[in-house]
Length: 48
Image (cartoon, rainbow, N blue to C red; front, side, top):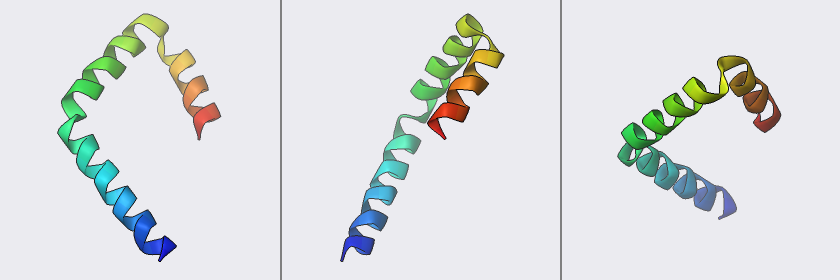
């Protein structure tokens, strides 16, 4: 049952990511422009 819930959660997140995709891309692009790409890679490594 937990596995099915996890799949449903992943699908709902994927749907939301598609729905808000363009907004998030613009935010991330602006963040990269301000912060610099090295800093972004550093944050992504921590988050991963």
